[in-house]
Image (cartoon, rainbow, N blue to C red; front, top):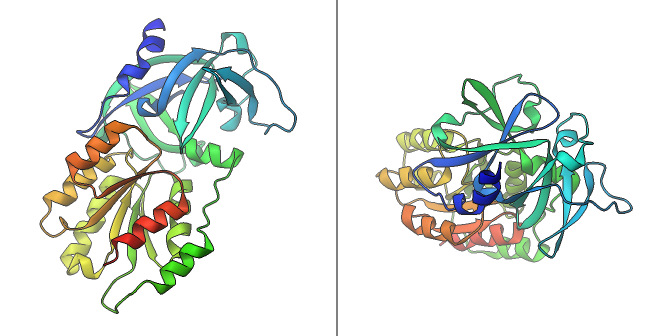
Length: 307
C-alpha cells in the first residue's frame, strides 16, 4: 500500500503509445474498479471529514487537504451500493476532473497496472450498473469496471453546457459559404461528456456525429473518406484523450497517417491537464488542446477553425 501512496504522482507522467496506467480499488463489494492514474493527484488514508449543511447526499463530507477544502464523494453510494461507513479504514483518491479537484471515498486501494488501451473495452450491453461505466477490462482473470466519473460528478454538480448569447450571435454572423460544411465528429466514452459537447456545438449551428471511442472514430472517418472528400462532409474532429480500445493521441496519429484524413482539424478535449498533454498535442499533430469543460471556449475553438 505504501508503494502506491508514494508513487502515484510520479506515475502520472506516462503518456502516448496507446498505453495507460490503471489504479485499481474496491468499494463495499468484491467487484474491482479502476481509474486512470493520469487523473489521480494522490491517494490518502481518509482524513477527518467535516459535515456541512445542505451537502449533496452523495458527498460524505469535506476535508482540508494541502490547504484546500475538498468534497469527499462516497463512490459506493454514488454507484448504487451501500454507503461506506468505516471511514477510519477507508481511503480517498484525490482526483482532478474538468478543472476541479475532488476526493472519492473508497474501501481499499490495490495497485497500479500498466495496460494497452486496446485491452480497455466498452462495457457489454446489459451489464449491471452499465449506466455508470465507460469501459471494462480484465486483470488476472477478473473483470475490472472503469467508472464514468464525469457522470457521477454531473449528478452532484451539473455543468452548464450552454454557450453564451454573445457566442451564438458571433456564430450567426460568421461568414459562411454554401460549400463550407458545418459538421463535427465528437469522440468521447462518457455519455455525459458527449451530450455536453453536442449541446454546445449545436448552439452555434453545427451538426454532430457522436462516437464512443477512438476505434469507432477512425472507422467512421475511413468510411466517410471512401464516400468522397472528407472536407465536404466534415469540419473537424473533437476527441477525448482517454477512451477504450484507442485513445485520442493514437486517433490523432492515425488521422495524420491517412492521406485522405491527414488535413482534418483535430481538437483534443479532455478532463486531463498538465504540460505533458501540450507536448503530446504537438507530438501527434493535434491542432489544439482544450481542458473540459467550458462551452464558450470549445465553441470559440470550433468557430476559429472556419476559414
